[in-house]
Image 1 (tube, rainbow, N blue to C red):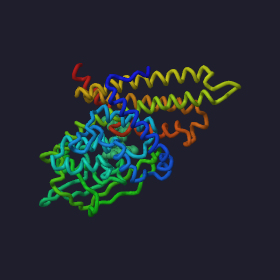
Image 2 (cartoon, protein in one colour):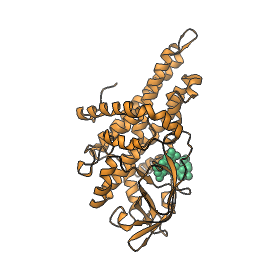
Image 3 (spheres, rainbow, N blue to C red):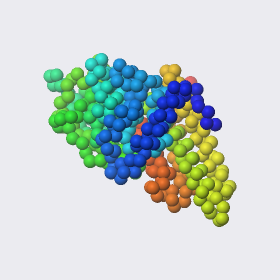
Image 4 (cartoon, rainbow, N blue to C red):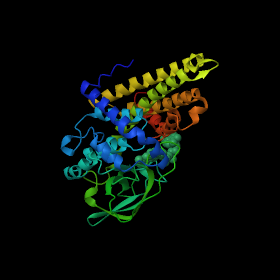
Length: 385
Ligand SMILES: Cc1cc2nc3c(=O)[nH]c(=O)nc-3n(C[C@H](O)[C@H](O)[C@H](O)COP(=O)(O)OP(=O)(O)OC[C@H]3O[C@@H](n4cnc5c(N)ncnc54)[C@H](O)[C@@H]3O)c2cc1C
């Protein structure tokens, strides 16, 4: 059951072992404090850069580690397995770095990717607004051309890494009269950026150590050269192209969390005594754990298949959507069952199962709500009806 999948070559497995140790040694001991403070130390990013966690699948010529999606998958899996949720490598390396790689000019890639790999620049992506999340075509933040600059006005919300971010890929309307065709991606470098403001850290149900905040743009001028892509109006297409990768990374983290939940609960049930015997001896506990382990194995198998397809370049939108909705939905069910087996202790945040339960809930909402995933799958099915 624990045999390595085909994509886990000996070289990737070596990296996995080293990444696992890095998370356990460097980050796990700080996670509880970061959760209390609602933000990880800024130094975490430098340390992540020094220990090789950042930009795993970006070419070496741009400062990355030169790996493939398999290396990125290992980082996402190990971060989730370690229950270190207080800084989002996924957003920084798995998403923003790939926007820059795919759509950035040579100059943009050389300027931004190497410091991102070293953890000197922290990256965020700002799509969601108070009035538009799922319906991204309805965003209102505008970036209007004025000489050699864009002048950005608007507000973004729920932005992961928002407090630390030095580099924000902002989804804007360069043509506010249009819907999808009016959307562009513009990079804002936040250091000494006049008119740019961050809101306070948002108080969340879970992922409480992650710095999530609102970002405000009030006549913010960024150079027109910071547009991603050769012309305006490509932003919506760019976002849609990258989403399957982002959704697979969420599914990878969900599958890793599921297995960790089963392992935690098995260990707890083996040592907790009830009616004179281990909790694990009760048939309900055994059946529940058997069901949860089956769910974890199924999730792992589907995720492995999706990783293979991503590596081959054949992962399509509906398959990534299937992985995202089904594994995050099942994760929440598994976590609820595992928490129940912990009794009152499962409700105490000092127990990992409680933190996992709270953290997992948002996975059904971000990266595209699970209802949207089902809509995408249904749309692809209509074509064969
Ligand atoms: C912790 C956290 C971190 C986040 N990080 C980021 C980030 O870094 N950058 C960023 O840009 N955004 C981020 N987001 C925002 C996230 O992507 C949005 O919350 C999400 O896209 C949903 O948008 P919304 O909240 O506006 O909900 P809405 O769009 O208002 O949707 C509300 C609900 O409507 C239902 N729904 C939506 N569409 C459909 C449909 N087509 N059919 C049926 N039902 C539907 C779903 O149940 C959905 O949950 C984050 C959010 C959270 C909570």
